[in-house]
Image (cartoon, rainbow, N blue to C red; front, top):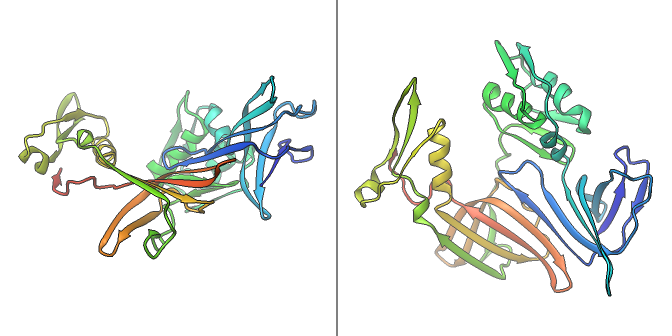
Length: 305
């Protein structure tokens, strides 16, 4: 793996010494991936006051984004720790200029809120949406663009490198782990029934009323209520946290958050979940990829709204 500090325009480049250790984390609920790496001591060139970090391997860029923190440690073994996030961090950290768009379209929003930050293009439905869309004061550039995608187009927003995607993750065959798949060196499953909600209330006008009820939980004597402006989202988030499977594999596994995965311990014993986070780590003790899977439906299947 090669690590390089470079300017935003990629004209100034400063190769870093070999890692002592690093970790790279992708999370389904976080637009930006996060990197943390420890290197032998180095001095950042004066021309790179606000550097970007690029990690590449076998000719492929694994990570690119702004450096958040550089920490120098003196002592018997002097070192530098680099903390960085991928390109969406620039959109998360920058406040959008309030605006109201009439009959907006994806390209217009992209040109205003993402292109100036180094993104090359956005892939998605380009039609104009009738009506208006407002960006309020205090919203980040990411929130401005994501809000349009969700409210006007009905799709999520995510980034891969310097390309943004307005749409659902491409459907493909589930990643197979364990038996007849990628070998697994460790696995653990956690069930947390305390996350499950028996009912969620929403607000209609000035009144709160029951929006979702889980009859299975109620029949078991479990009563756990939440009041929310978005009952469906609150209920789904709670159910997702009921079941969690953590799987460790050796080496780097090119998985994607949001992708389905199947873990098989033995014949007839398979568990299916959605990849929520991926942690790729490398140190003197070896290289591993940790996947965390969750189930969208928790353990109850008879909720009604």
